[in-house]
Length: 212
Image 1 (cartoon, one colour):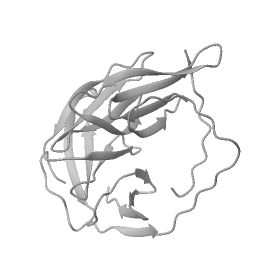
Image 2 (tube, one colour):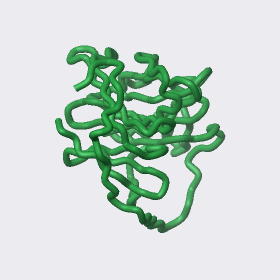
Image 3 (cartoon, rainbow, N blue to C red):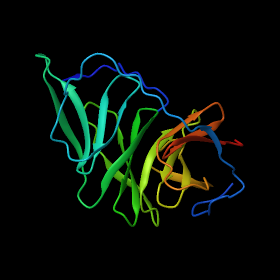
């Protein structure tokens, strides 16, 4: 199977484990107006994936999609036909945000009460497994990574963004968890850039400066 190459245009779209949110982290509104540029024709690549939540291209151009039923890789065969390969089954939780760190794909999964973090090495056929529980995080939603190899997870229920660090030699072991309070309802999509974490909040894009 051949990976779907990436060709997207998007427009505007020191605590230990178990620490509590730091309200001193203030968020700044970046934009409260949205714009969308669309051109050309619309083609269906794949369908029949229940409640698609998120999609992302890896650095090598592979396309992954998450939804209620699991995580999928969208591939294309030699004839050009696309298909969705199931890599992780949702079972008791629903998959949401995804992020890539050093050849490992991380995915959030939630059940409405608690959440968990799943991960898989980006091999030919990635095999996902649960690596960390996020108790009390009812809706682990958006995800992003920074240049230091840390993962950010949006808790849309409590308005918190969690930062998770991993072992230097083991990308499946969480060594630290920190929290940032957004002071807002439903933070969702995340992106880390220029020493700040950006997040969407209904009609606004906001930013929290990072101190390290």
